[in-house]
Amino acid sequence: MKNYLVLAMFALGAVACESGEPKDELAALAESQCSYADRKTVSTLDNRQGAVRVTTTESDKWVDIYLNDDPNTPYCPCNIPASLALEGTRVEFTAEVKETLPNERWRCQPVVLKSIKKLSSEGK
Image 1: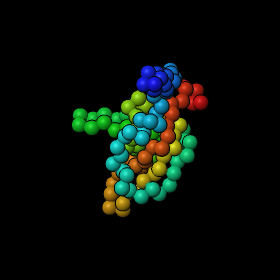
Image 2: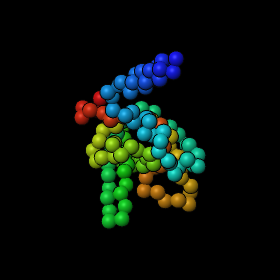
Image 3: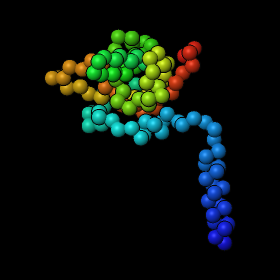
Image 4: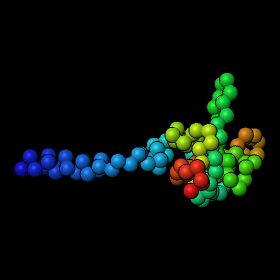
């Protein structure tokens, strides 16, 4: 009986790992820690398309997303997967826009990604 239990557990594990798909970006978002979690959500961006821009200085690296229809407002996601944090990557995402306090000066609008996927070079 023990052998059947071990065999069943092995078969179940093999089925779970059978997919040859790359790791889902949603899983990476769930594992990530986000420093904006204590801020109030002021709006939501649903299924918006944009491009990733990376700015590097001697001491910092910023990763922002600029929307196709709003190229003047950078959105800074605190939980973008490293695989998508590359200059020029086209993405579609849903995010919660977080509050900024009146006494704060941000270079971008803080957001927490709820989903994100890479788009092909044609934008679809």
